[in-house]
Length: 213
Image (cartoon, rainbow, N blue to C red; front, side):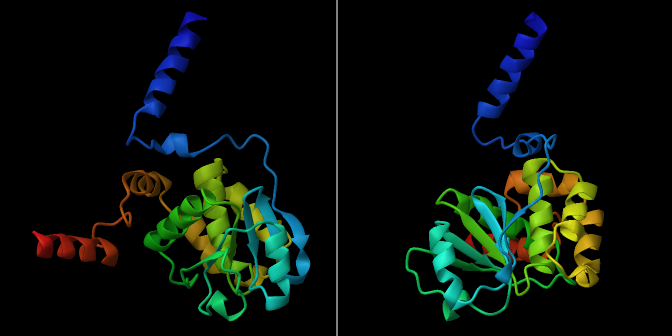
């Protein structure tokens, strides 16, 4: 009993130390996996968890559905701006266009950080054009990084969750299978823009720092 109490105390102290967002602390046990549940299949709208939804590109007529769900932020991985259909000033728009065949760690880190920061304001919707490939990749990485799912479990939902588009999953699935989760977690915890010091964003930041010295 004393050993258990000591372990619990040490864990509590470690997790409460400011500025130490441990990789293990970002994840939660995946003992009770629940795939995303359909909300409105007319635009592939699914609920991943109470404050996170995924969909295809909505239309203006579906704005009311987002308002009903109290969506506070829409994060768009498609090239077309959501301003074309969404005019609710209470919903914040974030656009981060992705190409699943060229996505890298910097793209995924940025997307996951955007989701987590937006969740502090309320429910979030992530989407691309069809709600399958790019959205599926980011959703799978969210499951792995923040909910403790394995790569296999996240890919199983990506392919079997009813979102469609399995014929286009090759690039997204390859990324999920090959991503180095240790390096990814370290970059996420440290605030680095990428897992590679040679990534464009890392070199850009170094150049800016040098210019500002």
